[in-house]
Image (cartoon, rainbow, N blue to C red; front, side, top):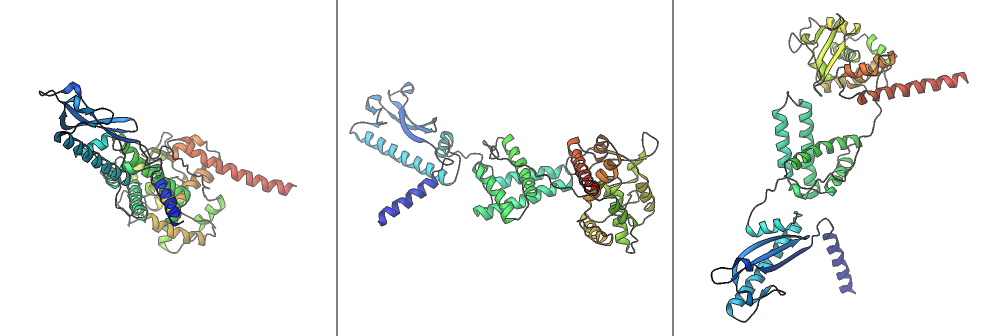
Length: 424
C-alpha cells in the first residue's frame, strides 16, 4: 500500500515537472563520416544530438575503420582493447550529455540541439538577463530626457522596474532571471502579483505590464529573446468614469474668498487650467513666450505638450487672461518669465482637497479634473466642435477626445431623464 502511494505521488511529480513547456524530444547517437577518412583509412566518429527533430553534430576526435563499426547499435564492434576504449568513451559522452540535458531542464533553459552542442563545446551563449535589459532600456530613456521623453515617463519605467525586481524575489527568490525563461505563465503570474499582492486596480496593473512589454519588445528586436512571452496575452484598459466639474461647481470655486495665500494661488492655477485645458506640467512650464498673438489678432497660448510633444494652440479666454495679469508681477516664481508660482503636483492636489471642502464640491478634486472640465463644461457643453477641442488639448488622435463627448451625452441623458420624470 505504501509502495503504491509512493509510486503514484512520484508519478504526479514527474508529470508536473515534464509539462509541455519543459518537454523536448531528445536523442543522442554516434555516427561515422565515411567521406572524411584519414590517411589510415579510418572514418571520424561524430556525436549526433537531436532535439525536436533538429540535429547538431560534433566531431569527438576519434577514428575507426568502418568494418569495426556497428551502425544499428551506434558503437564499435569487436574485442580489441581500442574498441573497448572507444565504446567506454562513447558511454562517458552519453552520460555527460544526459547530465547537461537534465541541468538545462531544471534551469528552465531553452533546449535545442545547438544549445546542447554549445554546452558540450564550452561555448557560452548570449544569455541576457531581464533586469540587465530593463536597466539598459531605462538608461537609454534617461539619456533622451527632455528631448524624446519627459521625466514623468522615465519615473514610470523606473517604478515598473522596482516592481519587477520585487516580483522576482517574491515569486522565484531571485534577483534576476534569464530572458529565455520568460513564458506566458510569467506574465499571468505578474498580473496576479500586481492585483493581489500590490493591490493595484486593473488599469494600473495593465499600465505596468505595458511598460514591461515595451522592454520585452526591445529584447526581441535585438534578438536577445526568440519567443514572445506576450504572444497569447490579452488585456485592455477598462474605460473609467472621467470626473469633471459642473458649471455651478466651477463657479463656487471661483467665488471662494480665500484668506490663505497658498490656497488662493492653487485655486487660481486650477481655474486657469479649467479655462485653458493645460495639464499640471504644462502650466508649471508656461512662460511669457508662450502667450502670443494668434491668427485672429487676439492672444493665444501656444505651447508644446510635455507628455506627447504635440502642439497645443489655445485662444486665451477672458478668465485665463485675467489670471495671467494677476500674477504678472508676483515675486515667488521660478523665473521672471514664468507665468505662475508653482507647487509640486502632490501639494497642489492636497490643497485642492481643502478647496473642494470650502466650495462644497463633493468630488475627489485633483489637478487633472481641470483638464476634463475644460473639455466638457467649458467647451463641449458650449458648442465648441470636438475637432477644435482635440487640437487645443494636443491630442494625437480625436478618438481620445471623443471620450469627453460620451461624458456629455451621458449628462444630457441624465438631465433629460429628470425632465421626463418632472413632465410625467
